[in-house]
Image (tube, rainbow, N blue to C red; front, side):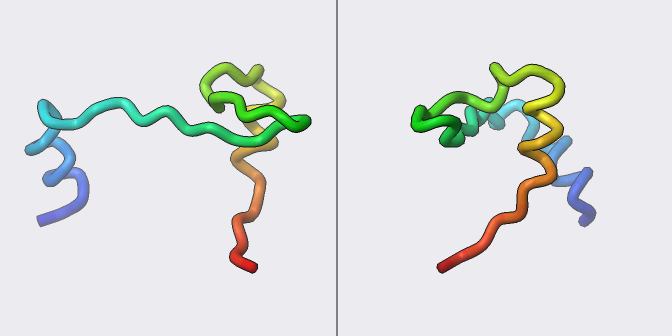
Length: 49
């Protein structure tokens, strides 16, 4: 079963996830970013210390 099949099968049980990130000392939801900031957020690299 592919990923798309699984997602479509359980689409009615899914809920929206709000992603927060720290910007200039504040935690803000990514969905409220403008186009430039959204693009910058997508280019960020995640790492573990």
